Length: 316
Image (cartoon, rainbow, N blue to C red; front, side, top):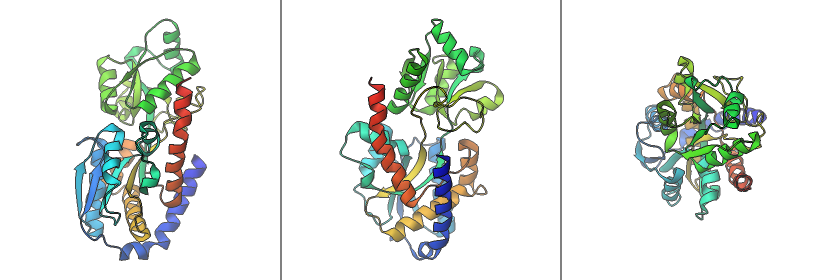
């Protein structure tokens, strides 16, 4: 993944130079409807709105944000796919929406129904517990489970529930997996003592910094930025991970000049830590990761194609 992201960054840099004139020439034929697949007021919603605000200031484009939530982003996808493909309707979801969620729902949609524009950031997805549980490491939590403790494990999506199951299986334990609505719900459950551990995607950073929470493991293919010594899922015997990104998409068939202009503009704002949006992305999500063009198309297609392997593994 490191090599892929590096290649993506190079491709983006070249694209910004090669298409700057095209982007400058393209103007949306009307206000841009920005569908946001996250609850109002949360970090993801704020990120999307700050990007739109900065683009209005930089480009003079008009955005009309609206919440379209539910079903792991599939409600937004279903609403977006039939919108005009002229750049006046885009949405922000997570790559999991167009990958695992779309494949699992078997709803007659695939990434081919959408035009990928740009990712903005990845998730700092950790397996997190309160420090007062007394576990200084992932191994200590597993020792508690093998000693008979019922470990209530919070997961905010079916994909993460599958990963929690496979994590327990690899370690020879069975977690009590609890489905929770959103990362904040997981954190509230852990803090309240209703959950012993759970997946959190960056929302835990303040608690970890304060010493109230601990990242026991990285659910990513790479170590966590804040806790680089925490083992990854690969270290723990799991062949899958929760790698994913916030991503802007439009309906399929978007003209290339519209796609390039929107993608480059979004990526530029997300990568600029001097903007409110870029500053938020740095603070909450560890920094921008911008993947565009063919690299993004390939990423979305692979996530969708690989979802079946995860579901099959979790069903064994």
